[in-house]
Length: 113
Image 1 (cartoon, rainbow, N blue to C red):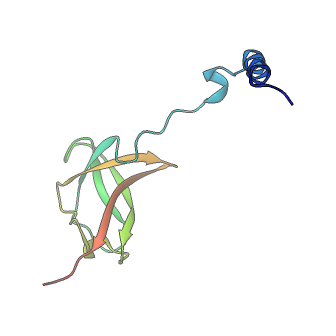
Image 2 (image 1 turned 90 degrees about the horizontal axis):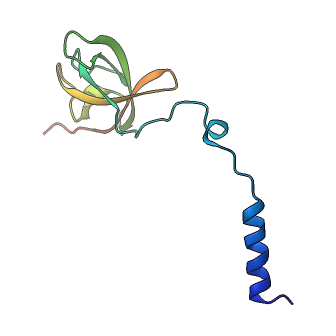
């Protein structure tokens, strides 16, 4: 049976000989930012049916027009039936993921009172 000092010495020796690759070999692509949004998009129209909405990127009315996909809609599949309501001019946080602009805000079915 080995004693604690022999185990510690062996672990220390293994750690010293370990080859760790540099950052260039670990990550060759750009890092993905926090999913709550890295850019601001402004709603071009009020929300309609479906889970997408037309928006202006970065600046209201003068920014590039993009389609934003809202992935988290609970108990409905239509943005016009969910809260918070997306209306013309409302800013939302968006990220460019897998070739599309996405909003990671959570939307939930609204109930008429």
